[in-house]
Image: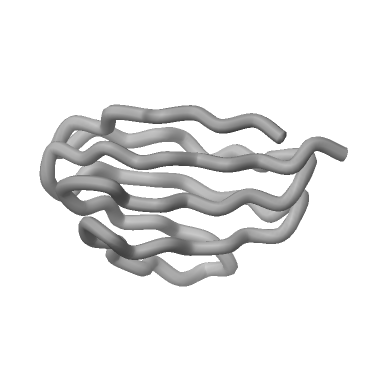
Length: 74
């Protein structure tokens, strides 16, 4: 299990990538746009998203945001 706290400033892109295991992305503060499976979902403070292993995804800061990413290693 890996846990990372990321700070994503407004306007900052996190390039498309994939995690080898399942992940959750929990927006702790601010807001991000999370793109996966050809859809973009806005996550605001308090919202959580699950993503299966190997799914390509990208993030963009809508507001200055803090997110908690929890990844299960494979």
